[in-house]
Length: 268
Image (cartoon, rainbow, N blue to C red; front, side, top):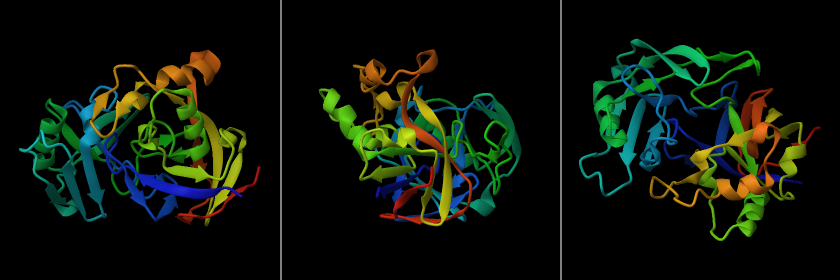
């Protein structure tokens, strides 16, 4: 039976992930996942597609305080910063994630200044709040600052198959999954419809279409000039309307705790 090999959470959209041994699954996905987002002063969101250097930022948020650290020696001026949630300004600011427009809340001027330096342009850091105001009718759940779905799953075997087709070795962090499965055939996840992991049941809703984001080297915060692995994926994972797919988007049908090495039960 397949098992859960890794759990990843991304406290701030497009920044580095953190690996967890256990996690609470909620309507909006992994608790604490993508609760913050870097935006321009007018609320336009910034991602690693255009600002790959954001992946050099590591964040931790325990519900009471946010800690941000820059992992690059090139940014000696960006010292680690801690801000208490009670210090957040909490003013509403209109923003959007793709076609979804909604209001998030401002955090603190020190975080705005810090991320302006990290992004290389004037920026602000927004918080989605205790409960996301963004409801996606297409999938019937609330979503945080994630692109379109609460969760993403990929199998280790799928990445191994991709690496067997390329001259270089790519890492799972390039694809930013929340859940990683082991003990499967390559792309077995493409055939799953409903699964159970630990206390939670998930609907496998749609394949994940990939873009230039996967060409960002997370260790350097730079895009690869050879456009890999997107170029290789396009040769054998192209689907309808020319989109390139890798991984599966999930929606949680029930909440609960999941842990590393939990069995992944295929319900449908």
